Length: 363
Image (cartoon, rainbow, N blue to C red):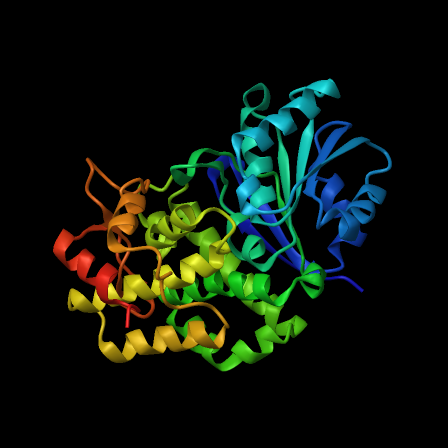
């Protein structure tokens, strides 16, 4: 039996559905309704392919279907991997009406979407996220891109999918570390705009870690609803969408500074959220009890909450100086006014920022 919820991301003439449910990969209509021609390329990786590629391909028997397997890991979210997708599309003589399906986690979704945005100046693509982080965050909203050695996600494009198909059953094969990484982004929604959701997460974190299907489905739906509302209001991140980057300015510096793949994206974001909370407290915005409450929930989610000892303040600042939210060389950070309300990117005094980088989690 397939139980499904449908959300719609409203974007004037480019709105699209987000399907969330159990068993969606077993029902071809969810996919085929959004395919514009007979040519389909499935982009996935070596971990996801043995689990779900055959199941998806079986639903596309009436199409000219090809697939490409990429290595697994953030360190492979590169221009070289995007070129491998272009090579496959060209070798198959796929036209600008071809559909690219990204089957996997956030890396595959970002790569597939970026390749779709660039190939023949844009072809349709479909997101089928298989990790919690991808299901609640990266698959929704049309941000695509690749990493550069000097900065994460510095090369990319906005390119909205035709639809997002989230089969919650895929989370049953997700390892515990990846599950926790996804919870960092779930917790972020509670922090930036949904206080009731934050308190619900405090009460249900154990059930989420235990992969309770109903609890996971609710967390995914509520997270996607929050993100869809934000993106509908600000597709190109000129305003409120930037609040979705809570913890990311610090987190991206960790990922870049430590080498892609050393920390999962959600792990780095969790540490970044703690640093943003500490900085918010230093500025007098957040009270100490709320900072401790935030850190406590992230710890319960089995996420790291202290920065790597080998990454000193100078290296942090170097990484943060390349963040996309910066203006005229000034570092801007999303902060918390309280649990449930984030600020827009805020310029911060260097001495206060350095206090957080030197002191938080260093003793």
